[in-house]
Length: 127
Figure (cartoon, rainbow, N blue to C red):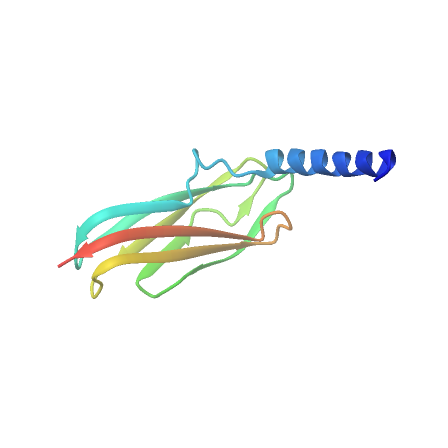
């Protein structure tokens, strides 16, 4: 491989790493997974996730869906300026569940950088 080709590949890799550093989500600040631990069947569990616009553009949240009707979610804000947050309120009804349960919350945006964000809740339901 020629010197010029190696240089182009290194520049591309360096650019990719910078892009990842800029747009990486801050999982310590806003974890995308929550474990409720062990609960009794029938309990209604609540947790708030944070979503931060880490891009340089305004993000419009176009949808918020859950993997089943037992999980309900709602947003504080649908339009986020760069570095702005929104809270995603999640409620899970454990009635009718037993054992390990995992449910998902999907946040859809108009952003090319983060078009879809998946949040996960886990719980061990005991009778």
